[in-house]
Image 1 (spheres, helix red, strand yellow):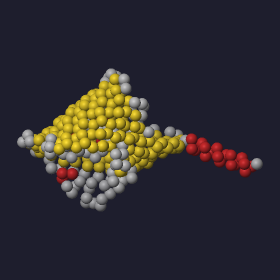
Image 2 (image 1 turned 90 degrees about the vertical axis):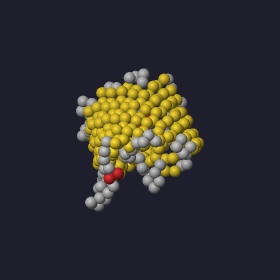
Image 3 (image 1 turned 180 degrees about the vertical axis):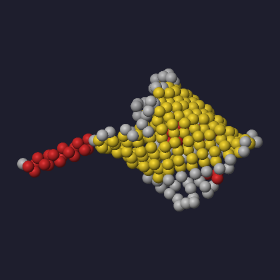
Length: 331
């Protein structure tokens, strides 16, 4: 009898512990038929694409309630190319997220691979600009000069503060794990304010590389979005610099309009790249798109992206058009 009571107590305790933990398997599959026209090369190619609206992925995330408001959290997520079945990044099991951490009244800490603190602010600028997708005009316009930023970092420590009257702050530091004197770490921070329909912030990221000035990069972004109810707008300014005294001034603006099961979006982006004050390149692009929700987890879409880049002499070095229609399903 005594042994039975002990066994029942152990089972009850185990059940309570399991109830305090949760693990979720989730994912997204996005496939489309696309046509890409390169007016410089005078080519046209029709392809099956994966992840044009949002990157196809699957992942596992979970948390455990440790008591007193403290939680242990983790997230493993990998991109996939569902048109071929290949990994998003060859040789990387979890290229998008791979971290473990703690959260509580103090905020949240993540250790591993995750988005940088700067990425939150850059994403904010394009949330209503073709839904931060491969159709977003930045994908062409921001290729004019300085290489664009890295949205994630490995070997990273990231801290996110709790909200204080709508204000939050974040900082991240990705270790290069390379012996000195080589320095190739990634550090970033953000300051963000949310109040009702307004979401605004500023971010900074430095990607050090003291072995190659062209790869020694700095980025500063100011972004905002506002939900008017009948439509949403987002936009931002980005300053990109490298160790060769090259500087890009970039901005983007977009709008998204829901109408029943439809949502329509339009966006524009522009970039001017200078070296020592002399214009070296310009890039601009615009895009139009629409989605239609078949259910809460499935939608179809169509979009068009048009943009070009020209050098300091005004000669076009890139001129691309993309048409696509596809379907996205979440699970």
